[in-house]
Image 1 (cartoon, one colour):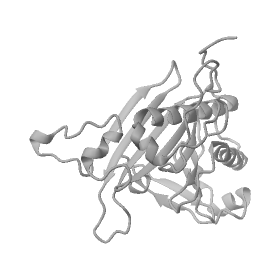
Image 2: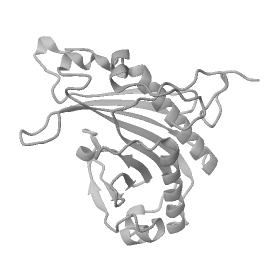
Image 3: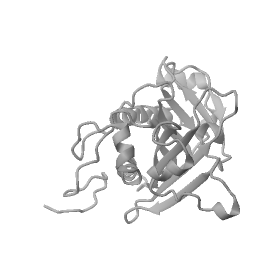
Amino acid sequence: MPTATPLRSGFRFGVPELPHEFAHPPLIEAWLGVEFTAPADLSRIEPAEWRRRLGPEWPAVCRTIGAAERHIPDVTQLEKQLRNVMSDRAIRFGGQGFSFGWLGHDGSLYPRYETIRDGFVTTLDAVRSALPELGLPRQTSVSYLNRIPRGTVWTKPRDWTFFRLWQPNPLQKLKIGPEDFAGRWQFPLDADRGTLTIELTHETLAENSNEAESLWLRLTASGPTDNEEASLFDGLDYGREMVVRAFNELVTADAKDYWGVAPRKKAGSAT
């Protein structure tokens, strides 16, 4: 039997089992996305048409969102977003493709990767039926957004060392503080598997805001496909695995203890 040989599914024989899950993780959004080689304009499809194809749980209301709502400070691209009636699922349509995501801002529990993948498949079927001229998939992305409020694993910027890439007071002699800090790191993945992007941002809030001051930690694995549907799903599975493993590498043991540890899952199980 081969050992440590990459498979297109993203799983490998002979590798350590997947990291522990957390009892109450900071995860607040999870997105699965695809871009196409020769996309039609998804934004020209009316929300009522998406409702007809996706079902009555999707109101025929589409709104535009920007960088602030996505917690990506340096991105100016606008996207159209549909939300379901429970406001725990959303679909975002961009210029090249779409993303299907889970939203946990209201405290809803993460439904596990398999459930989000099923929602992505349903959306892909609806997109292809509405736009039969749509091209082949060319790139996948898996993005997990974590919200880490002040008063949890940190109270002062000096506590941000729970995140292993953070260097405390890097510009202290210039009297530049870390407030509203935004950092971005990119790492290549195995062979032709794409890129892991890690973004850490600190957002201060207005005085009248009811939300807690927070750090936002986003991990995104994106990479090319082989221009076929099977490769699309292999890319998503691989990206999810890389994001899960990277998060566990990036945070300290004390932070993991704070979020609690759930029973371990074997490699190949849904996460």
